[in-house]
Image (cartoon, rainbow, N blue to C red):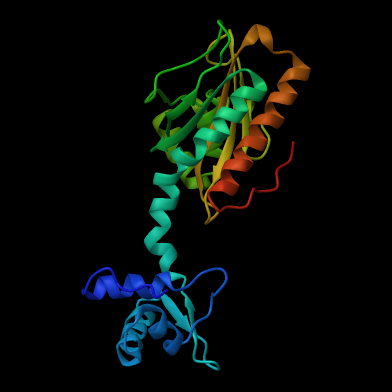
Length: 251
């Protein structure tokens, strides 16, 4: 059935053209598209020239057929990175809390601070849970160290310039952190352990972290190791859900 434009505007026509492409039909010619949407091939040809100029489609020099262009990523990039992360995180957090029995959260960053934007609390009567919008800004916070570890050296120095005493603490605490993961073993609150793992988007950018918050009395060395593995696996699952590839990490 032809995917006719939903209106008569050039935007409607452009969207009808782009919707013709699919995983099953990634490469299409002008005639195929014209037949699909019910427009004259000269109209489709002009539209393809416009879309190509904007990098929304690209033409094979030999076959003269078209495929979707990388310019679409620049249009959808902010949506994928910001809008989808919270929605994609909820089932990951639900699974993580279900498997560990502990509160899990999604944090994103506002400048250097980590902000909780989604959370699935533990069902245990004794638990660590905070309100959405809670901010963490100390280097002792695991999610803040995940953020700092993903920055350039110059950007980290900017953070240390604002909080000069943090530099020595960062060096001391990161000695026990892994790549893309950090542990707050009672460093901010004596009765709480926090584990944070990095989440990347489809471009490989660090955009968020998964955070586990656990009462200290329920954590021994063996369980902490399991929590680190569980948190890392959840962060990798969310990275995949956002179209990214989990980064190789050392313990």
